[in-house]
Image 1 (cartoon, rainbow, N blue to C red):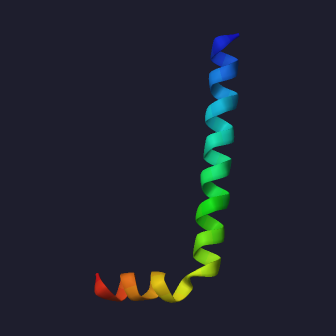
Image 2: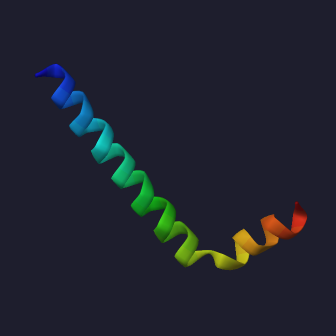
Length: 39
């Protein structure tokens, strides 16, 4: 039971981080392009 709960929690965290990262990239493409240009 705890393994299933851990898997569900980790999946929710991964989905939340993916949505945050996608929204961040969508709202700040100029910042990402400048960071990539610095590299």
